[in-house]
Length: 583
Image (tube, one colour):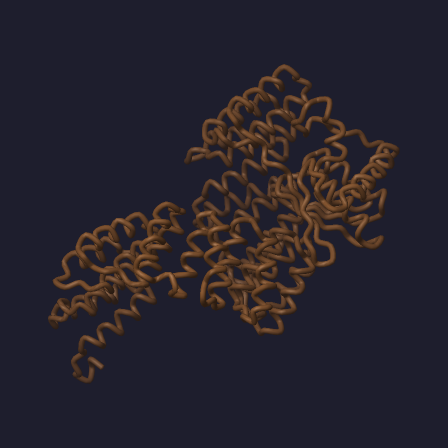
């Protein structure tokens, strides 16, 4: 256009600036800014607003703010552009502070303003400020606005208030697919996968068609619960509705199957994807890692590079985790060194934690501690917890105590270090130290998170909590457990009491029958046909006693039993576990 000699007007500059904002092409945006100044358009409020938006979208919030402050005229769109710039760049506090200034200057917010501010509160988990905004929204009559309403739902959910979010959702006068998806997301992100799936059923009954984002969230809920049958049903719906070619949906399907222990199904899906990005490769590599298939993860990692896909930070975390869980120490060292030297990826605390895990699981605790001392960044609680877990696995009291002291300083209310150190003392027969650490735990007011396990039978999820007897079939479950205990004892099973934290006189009964995964297994055995595989999901790491017991049960009953715990999948068959007792 410029070559033809035609002069651009204000409208054209606005259009092209929006293009720069979408592409985040800062240099071209700056060139346009220079031309705008030359042509005298900078004082135009629409042009000024678009310039603020362009700089903010390119990550230059300081430049955007300088422009905003120097505008000769500002309307509500100007304020919204700057608030959006802060919110989109992770500067939620600045966004909220600017809103206070906006009110002081007498500018009336509109529905867009409140949507942006609620998003800022959600990103900060700033519940109190979110509630204040909610009050203002009611006063100004914006609550009936469908976009404001669903953003309120999202804000409460992201602040962990799912009941408040659901109350708002149920009272909305109009609900579109985004509103339903926001509530489903709230449940899924707060670990309430069962509620997310139940809400989807109501969504279908209401005749609202899901979109690709809805399916991604539901698949993640299935993965978190190891709800394979419901995941398969969603897979069928995804095919019918034409979302299978969506790379995000496809990658999430791969992740769901892998997290449900079906690595072959996950790989078949992965191989048949019409488009694959780095997330797709990461999902499959992580799937192999979680299922203890370290060599498969390494082979796929090499294939990924051969096909020209560049690994990212997440890829290396998955590969290093795969090496750690499979005892591939030399391979893990090589991958870590190559990541730093040959691929220019700067290690994060997660990568260092993987290396400590790799060395610790292999019994090289001194090497792991030395590695931590040489880290260029201070180890965080995750790294120290990793070392503490390794000390528990290998019964190293001194290193365990040192790691415990560091974790407790960083996370004084975390129960996990107390549990792990108690296990170390119990296994070492140090009864005095065990009593002391339990007293310390009580004095600190720290409580162990109760173990919870889920099993899916006939498309229904059943949850079991340690020591709970409220399930409708609790008597039948207890009878089955008693039967199993008798058979297990004949097979040589002895409870490992170093993995429980209850009073000594109750330990044996609790170790044998109380843990949630044992209840879930018993429920599965009495409610599914002989020979049917049993899949369990647990919120915590499987303890050593339950691991040994499940191996024996799998042989006694002739069933394949899969348990997805907080870190990985265990496949039990004929008295053996896929982890090779290396977890």
